Length: 205
Image (cartoon, rainbow, N blue to C red; front, side, top):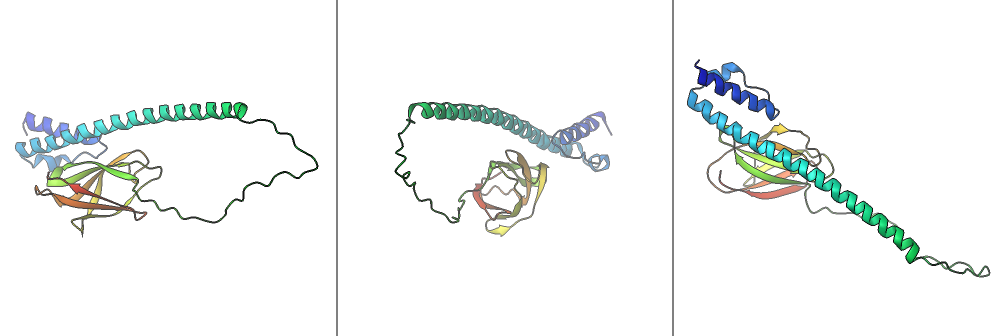
């Protein structure tokens, strides 16, 4: 095995480690020719760039969220403090009269229908083996698992390629779809374990 091939194999496995994957067995990579290895390296190089970009965006979002939360809490506290002193006036109470009745409070259970999912497809692209890859982000407050993925109204197999799963709040996951990229537009539907569904369009890849 020449030096160039050995170097490419080393770089491929290093990238897989960086994005949380196990290195390929050397026997598997050594059977490939130099051109196949270069294509595989190019694919993982793009994966690493997307992975790093998403981590930076996630970190930036957390900083902005904490800052906004601090501003909101401070503002509400100040308004509440001022309202207490400016708008509440002492009232004289006649001891011979009963206090006025307060408003009647309604009781009962009301069902709340959530009309949107707590996850979004941030991007889709062609990955290894000419398969569709999705980057999905949890924008809600609870963990999410996916029960079914459909393309053009047909069930397709999928697997978690990288990331935390079940998908924790404000994190991302790479999903490998067992659908070959064919340069056509497809409709995708993702259903989670709460039976909420997200429908979107997959562009040609």
